[in-house]
Length: 290
Image 1: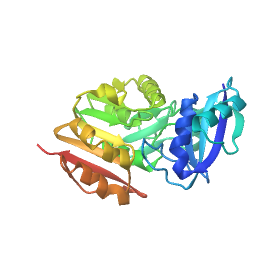
Image 2 (image 1 turned 90 degrees about the horizontal axis):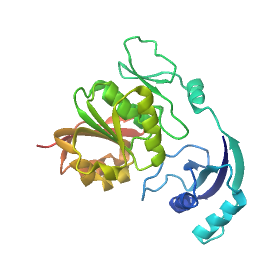
Image 3 (image 1 turned 135 degrees about the vertical axis):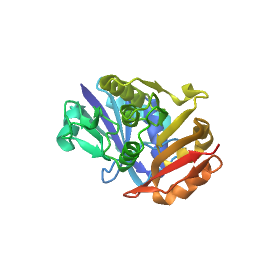
Image 4 (image 1 turned 180 degrees about the vertical axis):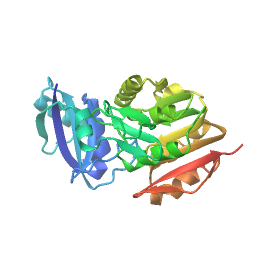
């Protein structure tokens, strides 16, 4: 399949507005890059992007008209739109791209993440086979790696788990492979939910996949949230009620300088252990008080 891609460079304070406008006119996906093409973790509502000059890229079905979409974008934004780059992109075999670039990856002592069809060198390994698709994680980002290493070191055998902000579903699948009995994967993005359903089906894992609104009062032994600091802070009350007394919450997507603010938002419910660090990111582990 061929895709129609529209890209525009905007100031950092307009990223959310332009991204929402692309969604309004029917974008299939919206990606945010800095001027140097470094991927940005998808900003949650209210989250400020990290760069002053940012490129917003939207993908549409090839049958769409680029000129017409530009006019629609101007109508939604109610201001003239800067120069847009409009081009057609052939589809790519994203699984092979990932396989060619990264191959099998080890996290901790036993856990491996491998492209579909590839096996790790350790025959005793616990293997998560992933097909990342176009937009979601495979373990290469530091925050995902932190969570995978934590799961390997603390196997959730017999425990119930929520993967909050599941993306590709990699953490939910890893938790299931490591012994969790009841696993729920949650995301606000319909594409993430679709990717997770496909990956859980492919791996044979029995995982429920929900939009957050469908969680209701569900409470579990372990919540893993790999999102960003601001939405973690804003969601403190909701996430806390999804953890049983005596259960745990594991959070990352947090820069080291943001850790104290995130912990402060959760201290009414949780006691935190030492931080785990990887590059500029940290993982927080909290135990819910009885």
